Amino acid sequence: MEPVTQACPLDQELNPGPFSPQADALTTEHTGRMEVFQALQRLHMTIFSQCFSPCGKFLAAGNNYGQIAIFSLSAALSSEAKEESKKPIVTFQAHDGPVYSMVSTDRHLFSAGDGEVKAWLWAEILKKGCKELWCRQPPYRTSLEVPEINALLLVPKENSLILAGGDCQLHTMDLETGTFTRALRGHTDYIHCLALRDRNPEVLSGGEDGTVRLWDLRMAKEVQTIEVYKHEECSRPHNGRWIGCLATDSDWMVCGGGPALTLWHLRSSTPTTIFPMWAPQKHVTFYQDLILSAGQGPCVNQWQLSGELKAQVPGSSPGLLSLSLNQQPAAPECKVLTAAGNSCRVDVFTNLGYRAFSLSF
Amino acid sequence: MAPKQGPLDEVIRKRLLIDGNDAGDDRRINLLVKSFIKWCNSGSQEEGYSQYQRMLSTLSQCEFSMGKTLLIYDMNLREMENYEKIYKEIECSIAGAHEKIAECKKQILQAKRIQKNHEEYGVLAKVIQHHPDRHETLKKLDAMGKELEHLSHIKESVEYKLELRQKQFHVLLSTIHELQQILENDKKLSELEEAQETSMDTDPKP
Image 1 (cartoon, each protein chain N blue to C red):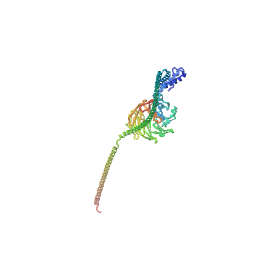
Image 2: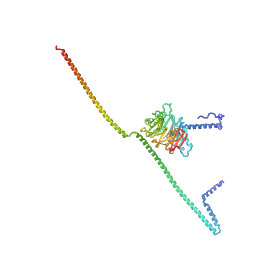
Image 3: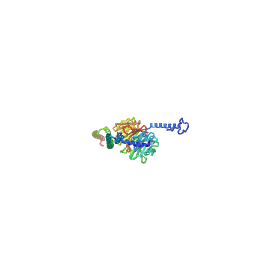
Image 4: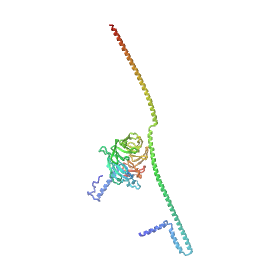
């Protein structure tokens, strides 16, 4: 955003007085340019990640410019919501590059971008004080590497955070001490997504190399590898073999991306149901007795485990990159599904059947 | 004008309270007072009596309307009580409905869980159906095992026969060789004897 330095043709003096018409013309031109710039920014914005606050009343969204915006859900859902309630209450520049992933604990918000992970205090953010608590970089193999961190995962049992991304490794960071304890290697290409299996303390990771690997955290090694593209039923070679999204329900796992969205039974490592969706899916999650997925295309798809498409609800973005369910027990009135992707808007679904409204950057 | 508004308002308020419906009660009472004064000032007996009758009728009209108003007032009080009762009942039923809603929500969650288990079962059942039946496979395995046993028996017997023949041929061959040796030995012996005889013949007694 360049300052207005070129001389206005009406300007005779170098320093116009505060109430002179030349100064007014400059300021209106300046604000006009600002508005055009902001409109252009919003047009090209992509929201990569979303996260709910621990109290359940606020939503944080991170975009490709590195900004994080905090929206007040309770204000937007209340009966006297106006247009301004659908705008962020605070927006701050979190990273220099895009904010690819965010997770939240009881008091902190962790955001990850190009090579670094930063922590913020929710209490500070809500008071509009936007200073990060700390910024750390996992140990990369060479100091020249700045790989992006595509996925963050919290492991509450051992109070640690797992980061995975461009350097094909899973790094574990202990939240109390802040040190990086393990680096799990095995993937041959960058990692897209992570999921936590509750019953056995295992982490699943899916990556560009087309494999879903299961890692045991206690033994710190790879337990199982599922090469999704090798199974004929779900592989789609014209889309590639990349695994874009993962979700697990202890015994079952859903994964999708290049290959078709498939439900796997983990114990026997067999693909059980193929969901007939031609568009690659970028985010999938289990919810009650359904599987929700979103990807290319504006709709949030609701599937039954048997493979039937129960509903397809359109959102306002041309493509969706993330879905988020607010299941915080502290705010049952804000129990919504939010979807965001290739636009500056976050769609809010109060009832899974239709889009209630959209929050916008 | 301002200082007069206060008492003016009071007067208007009082008059509205007395007879807001304009049912004519206020007018009737004023008329009664006026007719009483007229009756006091009446001259003849006839006029006085008729005035007296008229006053009595006005009085009874006033009493009638008063009775009516009291009844209406009673009715209103009882309606209020009725409404209070209905209000409380509705509050109770709203609370009951809230509880039922919460109960039903729990039941829905339970039903959804059951549905999910049902579907998971269905999905696994489909996968299992693809694999062949266990009994069939066991039977096939048994049959193959028996065949294997049978074939191995045959192999054993064939091998035994082979060995036996080998041994017999060996015996035969060794006997042949021995016989050959014996024959050769015999031939040599007879040759030697012949040689000895010829040498004895050529060599006479000294």
